[in-house]
Length: 221
Ligand code: GRF
Image (tube, rainbow, N blue to C red; front, side, top):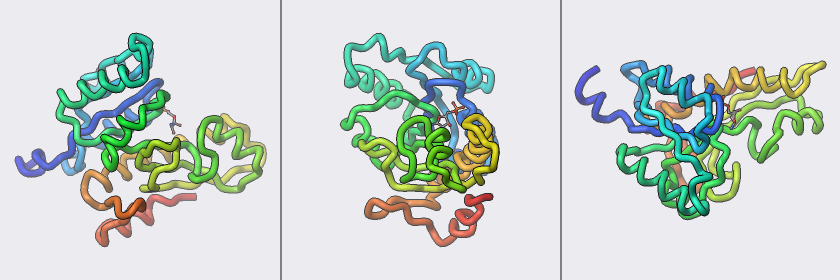
């Protein structure tokens, strides 16, 4: 890797609460020398998150900031902010992070924080998305990478991948089909953002000319 490539890679922190399978897919993608982001820190609000050990095994510094040790959300967010600043973080990637952040924290990271949600937003915001997709009888389901704004699961959409809902599916089989696409979509979406191929423009995400072909590859059936 040239010194220049190294210097321009965006410094990314991944925030998790659980098993961290999306985190692993991001860490693996970022191993490529031409990937425009480097994963320099993993933080979890839950000390027992299995993803912390998976990050350490991959050689990434990983720390728990137990939200229960703080009297309120603002106190927890301030502790988070200190860790992020100390590590010189430029982009935050939420990957199964199950803690609501304060509006002030979210606004201070506006345009620099993304999340993955297991539905085709704006459908099925919130939890239990696979059960609700089955109940609604949709034929297509999927996942969305979006910028984080104070309203839950409502920020500008960066990328989406679709999967079919098949006869006989239950929430587990559908979730298993979606997570395969999450692992593909999230590294591609982070590369688009970190590499300047996707930019926020008036509350929507605009894809740079050079990234338009790549975006077509994000939709899959
Ligand atoms: C994923 O389905 C993600 O879309 C949702 O939480 C789950 C996290 O899974 N936000 P993992 O921890 O990345 O395995």
